[in-house]
Image (tube, rainbow, N blue to C red; front, top):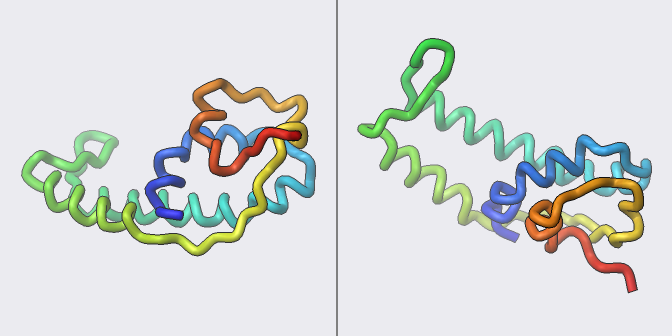
Length: 113
């Protein structure tokens, strides 16, 4: 799996991780949560490296955007060794996810047969 897959699914992953899940599912998702936190920290560090403070926010100016994107794109293309057992759809009974969330998480959630 590429880091890009997790990054592109981050909002849906966060929504899932913030849901009240069965303890077994929560335990299975723990490595994913840890990996997502690490990716988000690297992104924040890159924003700090290339960014400039604008009031309360740090923004990457256009003059640094190309270097920022080059470094971040290289990160997103890296392969990631993470072992996560897929979740059957019926294990998420009672959890509300949008169609877009399910589309983003197709690599993680499988239909119950």
